[in-house]
Amino acid sequence: MDPDTRRDALDAFTDGRTAQARRREIQPLRGIRGVPDGDLARLAGAAWEETPIDLELDRGALVELFSGAFEDGLLAIGLAAAALPDDPEAAYELGVIWLGSVDDPLTADALGTLLLGPGVLAAQRPLEDLARHAHPGAHPCVRRAVLSAAMAWMPEPVTGPAVAPLRARLGVPRVAFVQAPLTDALTTWAHGFLRDEAPLVRKAMRRVLRAWSRLDPEGVVAWADTVRGGLPKLLSVDVNKARRKVAT
Image 1: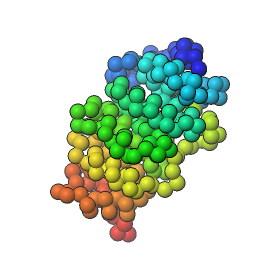
Image 2: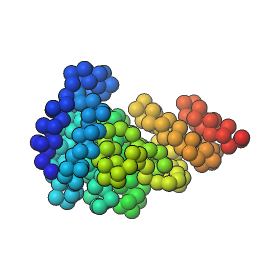
Image 3: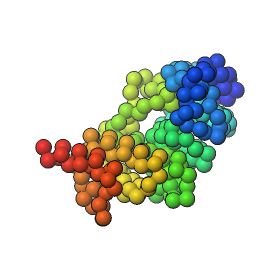
Image 4: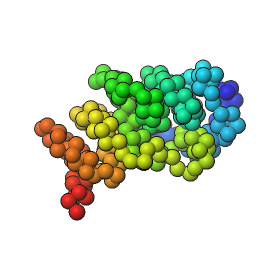
């Protein structure tokens, strides 16, 4: 893979209005090109079909691509995720490397859902290997990326332009990594991030709980009943919905 070729393709689809709107949403240090999500998804899918990634041969090129602008990072994540079934260990390691430079929530969500979540399981790593990166001193976006790994542990279709290469590889319109919620892993993560009060992390926690409550309300209620001192108010809203589902 030639990262310069990928950057030239992204440059061709930059749009000033998109860049302006995106900057109101996030401010990554790597900068923003302003590529609309639809165009980015099409470019990402076409990039995989044109040149499938070999994680051993293309590792350096992927790292270089990720270091570019926001859209470059999503493209790199998506290409690595499409290659994950071939080498889960290498894909997971790339995800951990990229954790160190994540500073926006959209990249964090893509990294967690597409690489860290499926990678830690496919590489048969202990969950503690991933959890240790979300220590209290870590950047909130790093903690959000680790938390977002939980989205891959539910049969929840992955959204966003970074999933396009994986859809292209599999030839399917929607991608989910499991057929049923992985309750034990979700319970561990819910306990681990329960008291994180950073707004970016709390928002991701509610996203996880909403999906978990919809797919496995019994599991959510069982977890909530083990929480000492009760749940924070914001999280109680989603858990109470699960309780009502279980009761009916």
